[in-house]
Length: 382
Image 1 (cartoon, rainbow, N blue to C red):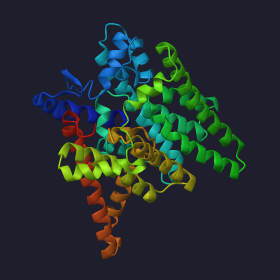
Image 2: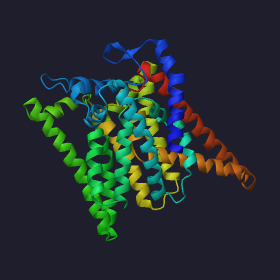
Image 3: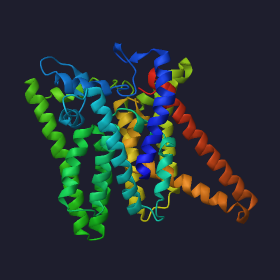
Image 4: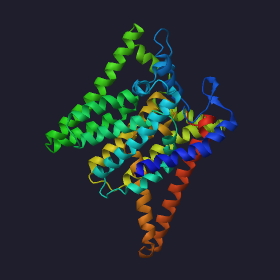
């Protein structure tokens, strides 16, 4: 129930606050002058709709079609033909958001030392990128299958569930690649502990990701009539690494010196959100250190891929696909509230530390909400 309430809060805020602002600004999607920003198809969701309506553009090289993995498009096509595709993707997104929050809570119950309170799911809108639950997107579908994969690896359901969820995760979005290192870490832990069941589940999860991805790559290449077509399409979204691995840092410095607010916000979210996530991962009460390490590797993978591709776009929503992202913020909210409730038992320095930490976290979260609302039509994070 609380997952549904959390998504409903996000929908109300998007429809009542964000959408009217987007309409008043009368701005269009990037590269699409005739397509206005809409809460059902913000940013690149339009291309899932286009692929559902028109099919993939195999005849000529159009990376804006080939960038997008097929699962969400397939789900749109499964809906009755009377439902317009733009509303189909919105329906898929909302259902995925509810399922994802339920699975994220289940994941949190397995990895945290404290039992998560489901009521805190209502506060998911305050998590960086959380308002994305109220718009049409593929990130929530990706999160649902990524969380299911991690739950399966941690022992829930039959082992084959790890393989199937790995396939579905990568067919939702390439973001499932963030889970490769976490699965490797769990596999190494399983070897050290002689836990054959954990090893088997990790291997099946990894196989699911790579088999699903390889199958889609091969299909794209065959449709295009030339091997390597998929990777050439992906490379179109990368910026050349003129200064090696430090190119992104150099670009960030240039942006700060240029004073371009939109670009500054893009780089700010790309660097700040992963750092704050890693900070909260250090503080979170994980049951085992391997669970903490696994979650940190997922966030770290996202940051490393950002550096290697020299592309800081959309980190504020991509981070949502990491299963630990939402839980660590909700756990931080809960721990802060409990410490405030026991304020009288704390020393003066402890009170100051708790107060400053809570205020800093809330200011950061509210700032990310503002960036999402204002930055979506203004291109501040893509």
